[in-house]
Image 1 (cartoon, one colour):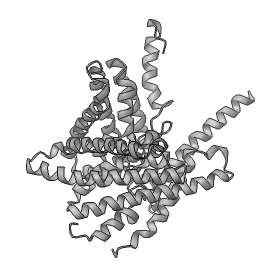
Image 2 (spheres, chains in turn cyan, green; image 1 turned 90 degrees about the vertical axis):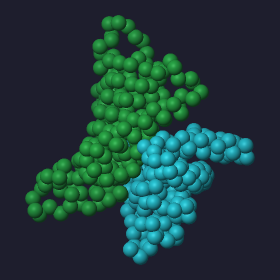
Image 3 (cartoon, each protein chain N blue to C red; image 1 turned 90 degrees about the horizontal axis):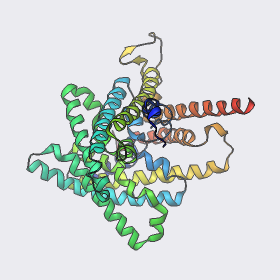
Image 4 (cartoon, chains in turn purple, brown; image 1 turned 120 degrees about the vertical axis):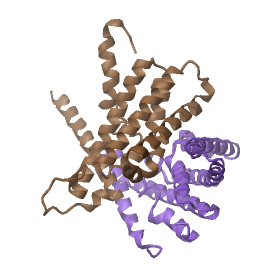
Length: 194
Length: 212
């Protein structure tokens, strides 16, 4: 696993094993914030940024924990670092773009409990990626998350104008659309020459 | 909520039952979707996931309820997360010790129980305001509801996608498995289908009430 090229890791996280559609990470914002393309793209940006920072931190922490031989602290330290990173991002966005801050609303602090971020940190540790591989992985995951969210938002904007039966409206419809999207993404499986 | 001494037993029962049915965390509140979709490709995986989540929920609700007067308001969320992460680590190592195969199959998703919104949600919304007994009941109800929901998905996906129930073949030789059910897309379809069924039942009930 360690010998994978950076490009492959990026494509793998972004398309082949898309974080949302095939690893089921970050489903909550995927279902919650995907009403409008605009908000979806911003949410994707915020998550990608947190992912990148958290991935770098997780790499450092993992090495530190290995050095002091305390792997059982891994989960606790990861979650603390992610929570602090989210807090930091929240303050930055609030300072530089109050409009974006309002648009993201409750979903910003909820990034802490977005499993995509913790999942990213855990996966990169499991797969023993080095620093640059971790960076490629984080960028790919962020891009994949944003892509899935924006596509979904696009579809849902169209759906608002179409005539669907009352009974399927809401979460059921979103999930079935997500299923179709997930099948579509399986088409990328051959990518990267496996 | 009005609380009188006479209505105590049914109310306790209600605390427990609401998690299973009326406020089912998965089917009604749509919380904790990630593990529900990710690990339900077989009945065993789903069951282990449900039990592990219930265990963490029970322990964290217990501790949060006991410490509710000691935890300062400002840092409560961080404290809850630390409590939850501790118990998830316990569950993680326990599963690893009991069955290394199941641990491998569930992978990172055991650790990801930490970010399951159901657990943090119950700590914040219920355990931080209620007595130990009711918090335990609430945890058992919500955990039970979650386990039932993951089993609903796990059973459908394994029976249709693999032709087996917990590893035992249920159809004859001639059964052609629906591969799509095991694939990620199948998870979305099955959950969507269950939600559809519930909303259809709800709509039908409303219509019969209107007609009556």
